[in-house]
Length: 228
Image (tube, rainbow, N blue to C red):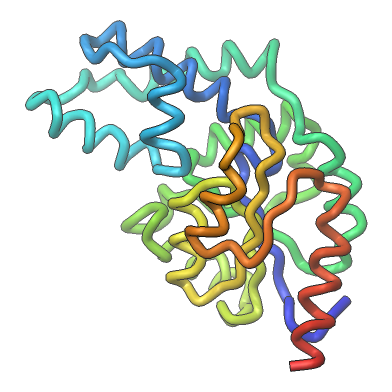
């Protein structure tokens, strides 16, 4: 398709599935029940793009005690409950995936079970499996570069020839630290005014809010690389 991009790496939540609002609601509900009052908006603001493991460590440090052993399973239970009724694929992402004639994979902060369930609910799992990678497979989640470097290694593509599609500042920070080009997507239901500016400030080469634009943007990046 072009001379610069050999692999497209998709984040999952907020890029493939419109799940961030659902996930934040589940986390807020469970944390509040466990003595850490927080709203879904506050979860979104503080932990968008951060792995569950690292968000938990931050909260435990703040409250000076450990959350119960079954905390993750309670969040998962609440999330899956909401997914069943509310989860949708990001508009037009299926067509965008089909139109991109390049290798593709997923690199997400979620657990493998959550990623699989979300993609399956949205009808996208079979289009992307088995090239699906989780922060649980590396030492450090986003904003560290580990997950992106792991995905590139598994797909046997050098980081400089990877294009990442992200909706969060930690995701863009991690991809840039891995030496990758990043496009910032701000078309999810969780994105507010100013989200695109925030993604560009974090290092996104370009931003877009409609998945129908993505194949053309990838072609433009390739054309630019050919001229350079």
